[in-house]
Length: 355
Ligand SMILES: NC(=O)c1ccc[n+]([C@@H]2O[C@H](COP(=O)([O-])OP(=O)(O)OC[C@H]3O[C@@H](n4cnc5c(N)ncnc54)[C@H](O)[C@@H]3O)[C@@H](O)[C@H]2O)c1
Image (cartoon, rainbow, N blue to C red; front, top):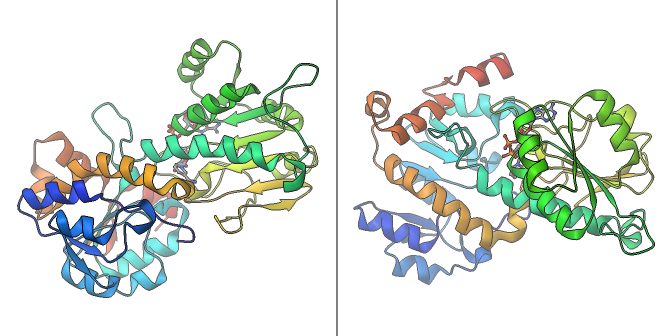
C-alpha cells in the first residue's frame, strides 16, 4: 500500500518464534523502513526470501500488515492462513477474491479479547488518533490551504475548535493531543459511559451524545473535525453529511480515520501518504487508510508485540482443533475468522456484504 513501511514482526519477535521451533521466512527488506535490517532478521534465525512470490509459496501462515493488493492475491493459495488487517466490510470485492482462493483469513481487527476489547486494533488506533490531530493542525496552516488557525490558542486570540466524532481508542488519543495543544474540543459518541470518563479526565472539554443535529451545529463552527467512529466488523456509519460539509468554514479540515472501514464522512474519498488530502467545498479532506505507516518504527514495534502471542498460536495450528479449544486466545482467533474454505464464516460480515 502506498507509503507503507511497517513490518508485522520485529527481529526480536521472529527470534521468539524460532525459539519455539517454528521456521520463519521474511521477505527481503521488509523491515527496512522500520529500521530493521535484513541482517537483524538473519541473526534472529529467520530465513530471508527474495520476493513475495517465493515467500507465499513457502509459508503456511502469512502474516502481513495490510490487506493483500491485486498482485498479492494472485500469489495466495487455498491451504494458507492469512493473518493481517483486512477491513472486509468496506471491500466486498476483496471478500469475493479471498473466497475464490479458498484460504482462511483472520483479520487482526476482528480479534476480541475476554474483556470485549480489540487488542490488535488498539495500538494502531492510538497511533492514528495522535497523527490525526498533528496532521490536522498542520493542514490548518495558510500555506497548506488551511484557514490560518493555530489550534492552541494564545493570549488575545481564539483557540482552534476541534470536533472529535467517536470517543473510543482513536478518538481519545486524538483528544489527548488536541488538549495538549490547547484547542477547544468537543467530543461526540453514542456511549455515555465513554463520554463521562473522558469528561472526568479532561474537565476542559465538552462531551455530547451524538445526534445529527449536534454534529451539524458543532461541525459548522469547527476548524478541525476528526472522524473516529467504529461499529466493529461493520462498514463505518455516515456521521457527517455532505450537506453539512458544504457549509463548513472554507479552509477547515476533516481527517477521517475511519476510512479503512469506508469512512464516516459522506462521500469522502481515500487519500494516501503521497497525496494526503484534497479540497472540496473549500474544505480540506484527508482520509489515509494506513496512517500509522507514517511512523513505521513505532507502529511496527507496537503491532509486533500485540500480535506475537497470537502468531505463536497460529503457527502450525490446526484450525479445526482451535474451534474445540478451551484456551481463550485460541477461541478468540477462531471466532475472528472471516473467510474459510471458500465461504464467509463471520456472521456480521455476511450481513454487511449480503453475500
Ligand atoms: N486510518 C487508519 O490508518 C486507521 C488506523 C487505526 C484505526 N483506524 C480506524 O479508526 C476507527 C476507530 O477505531 P477505534 O479503535 O477508535 O474504535 P473504538 O471502538 O475504540 O471507538 C469507536 C467509537 O465510535 C463510537 N461510535 C459508533 N457509532 C457512532 C456514531 N454514529 N456516532 C458517534 N460515535 C459512534 C463507538 O461508540 C465507539 O466509542 C476504526 O474504523 C478503525 O479501523 C484507522
